[in-house]
Amino acid sequence: MAILQAKDQAAVRKEFERLTGPVKLVVFSQELVAGELCRQDEQIMKEVAELSDQIMVEVLNPQIDRERAETYGVSDVPVTVVEGARDYGIRFLGIPAGYEFSNLIDAIIATSRGEAGLSEATKATLATLPGEVEIKVFSTPT
Amino acid sequence: MRLAQHMAIASDKVRAVAIEATEFPELSRHYQVMAVPKIVMNEHVQFEGALPESQFLDAVVRAASGDGSR
Image (cartoon, rainbow over the protein chains, first blue to last red):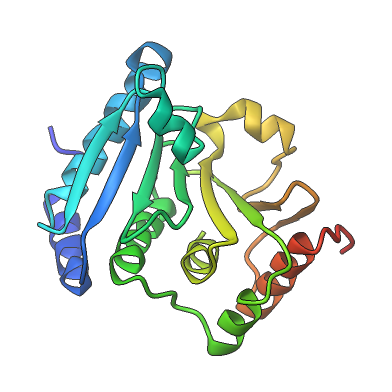
């Protein structure tokens, strides 16, 4: 049974008309560790990918595909990497439900276009950052 | 997460990681997540709730500079 309802599929398909380049969703999944969560995460990513020809899904097991997991800096499951023309460092740990689902769709569109929806002043400041920053955003599916 | 992921696209020095708190309880405990959204930047800059772009950027700059004061 589909996780995304028909009206959600239609809305996302409409949003995906803005995609301008290919996006890969690299899903790290391991049923032995988190079976139900990984199954649902894989399914939702595949359902999203079906809504545009520009999106493909690759499912990897971090224990088997160790080099790829290391390259992406992934050690947990389920984790999804949203990759456009390059890996921008965008990761989703867990199933992106509720508000995070909107952020997943937004991440797919932004990585596809390679465009940050930020003010010019913000972009200018980001260009001069003195060091690297990892931003973790904790949320719950409400 | 929206601002974080757009900043990751704008700068190769920024990574954005969305974490579903209930599915990763150990991480949530480690970072003492009591309310969401909770944002943690380079371990030492932390806050709860959404911020406007300019204030979020200030926090990113502090984290990048190794300044944990807030």
